[in-house]
Length: 395
Image 1 (cartoon, rainbow, N blue to C red):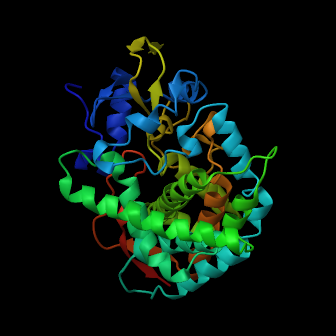
Image 2: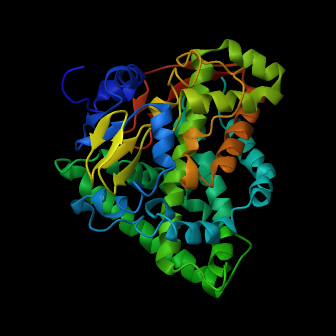
């Protein structure tokens, strides 16, 4: 492989896996575009870096990855850009309102949302699956969690697409700068109003829970609350949109699985797990080195921006047998798609639940899904998935 790989090149976005495979073989630690990032691509090395925040720091990301044109980083007080001990304080506070019991209580509402959306899909008529189902399902769930204005659901797509595209937006993309900054201002105005309203009039929702949560007398600051709510739009919405979309893409590519899952709905969860490995929503998370370090025999300098390539790790043949084969009968659970170590995603159980329930509902109504046009891919270094997915559902 000659020259630096550009992870944002359209042909790589459409199918990055051959590029990842070549990097694992010939340059498992190397610099790539955009921005001369150091990419780590093998499962063992990615996992080790996740578990070593003393060297591969999340806190460094706060100042090094917010581009100057953005003004300020709306995630600057979020736990994803914190190292211990500050990370643990914030994670402990947030997790009090994010318990498995709280997530499981949502299943009836998720099923209700999914049924409503599925009923709007007309058999034998073309639809953009992202707009019609994959986006509004998690958007409705987040609205339910936070008791947000249901008329705002339509805005969530623009918010999530704009925020997740920051990592793939260069200094030259000036036409995108103002749009993204306007989105940040709009979100700040709306979410500030929500937080202030919950302080005055608490409800039975997660924002109210977060406002009143205390651990050893400490509470979340307004800035921390705002950063967490911003984080949820990307981590809680965008990644789930892509997971649900990837699930239906796999059913289109492997239509024989539709009959199997319709006959055995209890296997839908197993199918979702293999989709998470085979087509993870998150492809890379950035860290900053606190000192010069060596990985796979390559010296990475202090202060380097490093991309931990989850999308590549999940296709590593040293970890997974026949990694480029979709096999829902694989044993074991692979949590790499949700991060690793202290930053393992709190929302993993909710994402899995939404995907499972959404698929159960779709498979109860439709026998197959036929693609009707090319997939349009998003432009984010972190999250990879369809912006649009045209298809026809068949009863």
